[in-house]
Image (cartoon, rainbow, N blue to C red; front, top):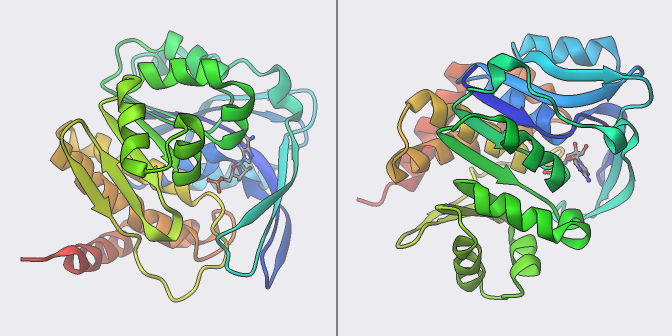
Length: 300
Ligand code: AMP
């Protein structure tokens, strides 16, 4: 196993200005594992209930995601529903039913414990810490979070931030957590908590990578149409981790290159609901778009 991902595995209901889809495959771990799988062997750590449809499991298998760390327990799978406003930038959460996540404790299969690349996707920070306690000297750990945990679990979240190599948050979460409005100050404050890198996501405007002495600005790949932006951050992070692991390097240059792949895979992901578009895309199409994207980024 090159990369393990712990995160939510869920059944989503999503409404955009033009369409409503009910009970589709979602969850931070689903998006991240699918995205990672183009580049690396990836294992999923999560939980589903006995209601989890067989065809969703088949989707993971179509991406060759290892499911040894996916527990199935009595009860209902995590469910989430959200509605996008006209500009697709603002989203309102309609409901979150933790269900089997309420009593979940992630237990890593033995062969996951020595995995070098670990992505702690959006899930309760206590659970992220429990995964960190089980892995043996990983090479690189990335963690993500969301507003909910800043509101209800800020102390364990700060512990997570102090133990990872890279922390990723969106713009408003970074401001909320640090109390700093200027992104540069918010990023500095996050770097002071311990990670070497802080990656601030800015939705359709891309992301910014901060380290102690450097800043790198990455736009998003421009698209004509976005069908469903759900999971874009998880897809970015999964594509990032998978390609970063495959590079075998840990330099900041390697991080920047992996951000290109993260952006490209995320750009495919949002073209359709759930993992539908990612299921159609192959690595050649990803490389092709990555080439176009690098051309767009060239300034010399
Ligand atoms: P994003 O668009 O990056 O916020 O990711 C959306 C995905 O996160 C959806 O597929 C949801 O199932 C999942 N999700 C929503 N709320 C939570 C939560 N509280 N904890 C973990 N995952 C969540």
